[in-house]
Image (tube, rainbow over all chains, first blue to last red; front, side, top):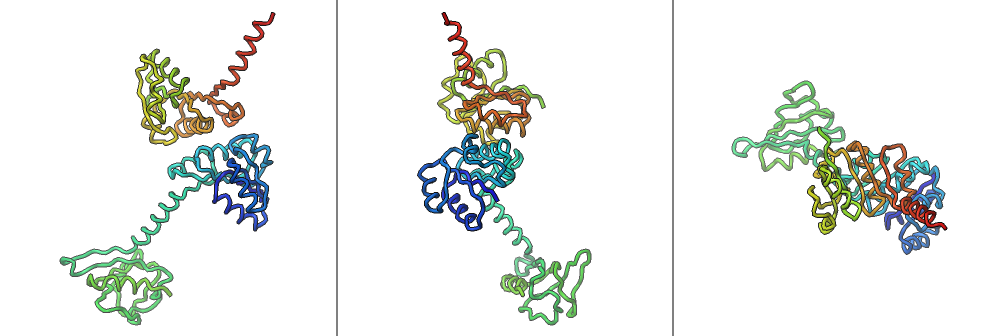
Length: 220
Length: 138
């Protein structure tokens, strides 16, 4: 693959190193002369010193028809212009821009950049994903918090999947009062088997709550 | 939605004077600049709104009624910012008339295929020089 790496500091250095090991055709452009030299010496590769937002720099670097251009500078607008110039004037097939402002992720994509990367945006997405996993467990306290009702989704890698309730060594003070197996609601007996995708409604006491959740979520 | 605003981005000498002139002829002018100090360049007769903020932040643009803009004039000191803002005004807000000042004539190629109008001080100065030079030819 012909890859253009425009701007950036240590991320550029790291990507150059990684891609060079895989024998890609790399074109490295960096506006910071000192850093350009550093990348060059560090990776034994030639680096074009210049501004990748200028058409003549891209032309000099012979980046025509490259498979991908990564714009890694600290300035979102400059990264946008580098990507657009590469795409529109030099036929670069795919453009990737790094952005500092997470709000620019959606916007830049709308304006025609193929991929937009923001560390803050990725972090927020990770947190959202984590919290949606947590959401699988819902609890409700009744009778002045002496009783808790726990709703918990069974995933396919849980230890108890396909076991009969009577064979599962549950901790004490637990009662699986109801299983919601879309679209059916099952009042379980000892010989009911737990299936992946079941939603268990469990009655317990607050002190045993954590132990029960840990037990149910035990993986195979 | 009525488009009746005249938005100027960048309150340099050019931006400030366009804003003042359009305000004088009765346009509803809003001018944006990232520094408060820049608005000192506006003349007494300017009667529009001043907004201090970074126009590359969409919330600043929207506060400046970009959605109601019939015309936007972009004159910040960075060509890259100017083209980016012109693209945002064109593709995101569909502003019907867009003018952008560019120092580098090469950059104008990024506006091909749009109705965005570029103003190049370089080209204007060059042709002015050629005119004056030929006029003085004895």
